Length: 355
Image (cartoon, rainbow, N blue to C red; front, side, top):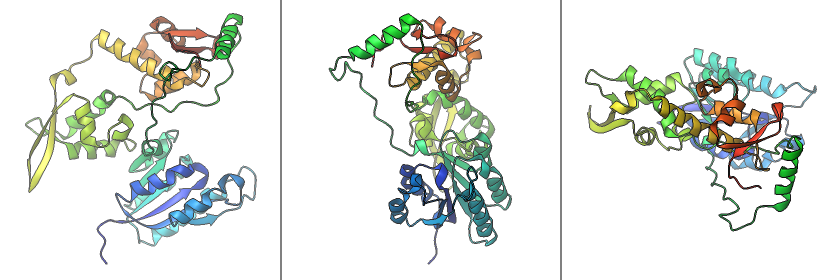
């Protein structure tokens, strides 16, 4: 039987992947390839990997048992790398899928690509850039999971805010003490499509023809070649064309191309014009508020350190605000309440109910 899709080997680092992401990862990779080898590496006698048994049988994944002979040493990484090289030299595959967020596989990815094979990476958004850029494509597992439903406020559920929580926060704010560390963080919401305009314009500039039109397929290819982790789903769009349309920055047309039809685009004048000072400030304030909301813990407050991380994840920096520190930028915005002091400062959007 002749297959249309290229054969791939999927190698999974069990210590650096969540159990609930395996199904969407395999579903995603089978869109691009025919998976002929499925192996997962880890110490499955340990308690934290015991739950894998049912999932491995469900997807016909072959477990490679690696005992932890020494505390702090990960024998699974070495076994995965050795097997990858054996499979590479067998010349039976056209690509590999490395499922991990571990930077230890950076050199493995580059070595496989040196032999002319394609490397897909799957991992969390915490994955180091070195590993991400070593892959032809790196897909964040957060984009493969279903988007979380927006949480309703107590008013929307017709529930009163907790009086005990209100008293506790008031007591802490008046005494000058710090709030307890948050138990967990909220998942970062989708980035607005407008944040992809800069990359889209760069791709357009490099592939546009003499008439000023760029084919969407060529733009997508250029972006993935230079930004392996670029994914329309990061911006809440299922497809590349959906992202281009939602930016409202491009004119989109369908034209005859070779033996069929293809989509072409060119930027609208407004997209090419630089933002005014007021527009930049408005855009930054929106990103600042989004970062605070994303960093807000269950107690209703967002720690300053987490806000900084979320702001960086949105592609913004404190320097853009015109202030020396993030605390100054948040205070000057006039949209946030603050409690605590020093590195233990906490913020929340004004008018936000206590939790």
